[in-house]
Amino acid sequence: MSSGAGRLRVAVLVSGTGSNLQAILDAAPDLCIEVCAVLSNRAECYGLERARRAGVPAVFVDPKAHADRAAYDAALAEGIDAFRPGLVVLAGFMRILSDAFVRHYQGRLINIHPSLLPKYRGLDTHARCLAAGDREHGATVHFVVPELDAGPIVLQARVPVLPDDTPEALAARVLEQEHRIYPAAIGWFAEGRLALQGGLALLDGSPLPAP
Ligand code: GAR
Image (tube, rainbow, N blue to C red; front, side, top):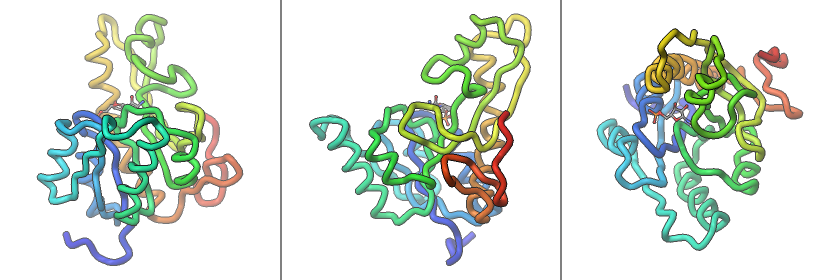
C-alpha cells in the first residue's frame, strides 16, 4: 500500500515490545493512516525494530543526552514534529510526559492503558486488579491530559478475570483487546469522527458516554 495523500500521518511512541504498534501498522492500510515515524526512549526496544522492518523511520531519543524532563520532552517533540504527524499515539511509552509536551499536542495525543480507567492508573495494573479480587479487567484508550492516565475516555474493552489467573495471563488477555480497540480509535480520529473539545471526547459531535 503506498503512502498516499489524504492519509493521516501518525507518529507512534514506544518503549517496549511494540505489539500495539504492530497492530496499528497492520491495520494502517484499512484505516487511511500512514505511520510516519516511531520514536522511543529505549534504543534496543523491539518496537523500533518493528518500525525498521515495516520501512518506517525509527528514532531513538536518548534520555541520558538531556539534562532534565523539560529538555528531553522538547527534544522528543522536535523529533516528532519533524515528521509532521496529525496524531501522536502512545503505545507502551513508559515515561511521564511534561505538561508542556502534553499541551503542545492537545487534542491529537492519545494513549492506551491496561486497565478500566479510572481504576488502576499507573503501573502494575494486572497484579493490582488480581489483588483487589476484581471479576473484570480491561484496557482504555483515552486522550492525554497533563494528569497521568486521567484524560477523557475514548474506548474501553473488558475481559473477565478467570480463576487462577496470573498477572501474565491476564495481561495477555487484555493485550489481545488492546490490539482491537487501539486501531479502531485511531480509525475514528483519521475519519474526523473523534475529537477532544471542552475537555470531552466527542464522537460524531456527541460526548462519548461515561463507561
Ligand atoms: C500495553 O499493555 C500498554 O497498554 C501498556 O504497555 C503495554 C505495551 O505493550 N501501557 C502502559 O502501561 C502505559 N501506562 P506493547 O509494547 O506490546 O504494545
